[in-house]
Image (cartoon, rainbow, N blue to C red; front, side):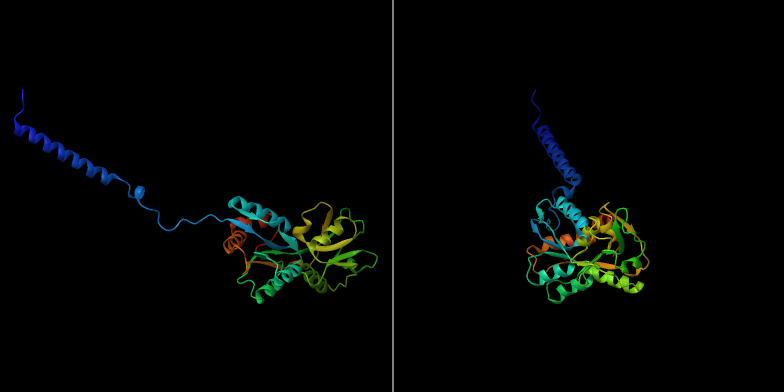
Length: 269
């Protein structure tokens, strides 16, 4: 039997109203965030090379930090790091060496670079102190800092112009000791190498360097807490990729970098 036309029109109106209400409910329940555009620009991934000049005493630490930084930024390649005495590195940078980041073992050599307009705003990221080292077994029978004055011992120290040498000179002066020095080395690694190889009876190195080898024994001496080296780091003004350089500096002074440095024996800045 056919329905009356009026009844059919009523059914159509009711159905239309139902569809309208359903659409409104769906729109009300929709999460606005699901369709909204991202707020602000998405930061691009760092890409490129990074060249670092760092004090010799930072080798173990910066080799590890460079690896961690590359893991965090897979599109960044840290070039083999140049390690040497801070004075040597500062001179090379001033003469035009193409470095992106400079990490010095003292503030004096960093200031040389800053004064040339090649860096600004260096940040302290670590501290270090000295320790007396002798070959394993102590064949020379060294007992104290005063023994470095004995002419029958072979003593090696860092050269005065590098941070470990300046610190050594201050430590010896404070103790009233005039060391009988057989050779002065251009960085702390060279001092440690000679003592570890048995080519010297004693030397002064940073505690962090002494901890890298079992080939030396350490002798703690009084006064080292008063002779503290402070390490600054800066992105260089002529960095080929300033964003990467600044990111590495931020990484070193940040939580992860500080944890890695502390684990290797460096003090807080």
